[in-house]
Length: 415
Figure (cartoon, helix red, strand yellow):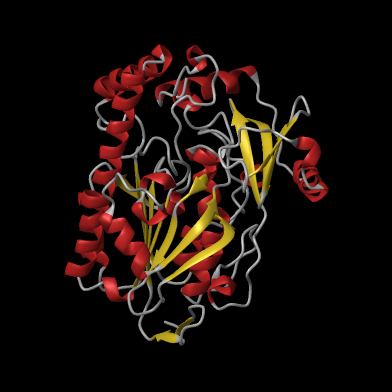
């Protein structure tokens, strides 16, 4: 395997002389403000915080979409969601589209993934080599033990922080009942119901950090793999609890908690890269995108670059780049592209694709995005969003396809 130079800003170059293994761990619906390393003071996330302390934490990482299907596809292709077009669970990804799985497999890596539900994530992507559920990590651990002697790429997508937070998705009856209880609590607009829901979420975040991620890192340590494994930790999107809806009765399902809006509580995500002895501790303040993960991981593994919308993050680590990277975010509804946003600090512009209406927020003075000022937004944002709209992959769904999309979303509690 190649020797890989890994540079930290202001730090000496460290050379990896062994094969680089890669783990990508995605915690679904994890908000950055519930992690200690991103400023939380009321949730115990010591393990994730230590991961960030020992590696690189990206302070401003932006997802390509506000829910799992399009955002995860962006993570594994490096393409913006409006370019890959995978905007619902039964969409077809162009078979010529390069993925992170195919790239690593082509260079001799053992590749596998463990997902929240094998009927959804990567179900039509054989190169992902879905080996089972991630609701427990037993399967992932068994795979690690079996493949410890050769270079590997392992993707894990865990739903512990996805509402209703404390019920396994496999327990369908209990899961749907608990989901409805959360929605009922939001619709009641009860302060006690909201606090109870948020407390459940805090406990789920702690479980994600102190049980799941902790046990994963312990397994890598126990197998002697931690020292030559890149561990990338991120979320596909954040979470909300109906704050954006004047009438809480309008919150009908999971879609209205993440999916319906493009505000920062949904699209600002954690991103941490850790590789002991190979990457120096650092915090990167510049804005980056989840689409940058694939080119970065390939770069750090010494593999050839692929054509993507994202770019390797290495220039931000070696000091050759410091600028914010424009982030484009696609909003969808029933498989159709409905919103397109561009985030270039300190501004975010959101375009309603059908009506042409705009929202714009000056994030440095209005971080909660409460005061829309489209007339004041920088002209370049409007230029970017319309250019991206012209390049968007558009597909009009038939009535039969819409019915299929609705059924799949209802099955997941989105409707």
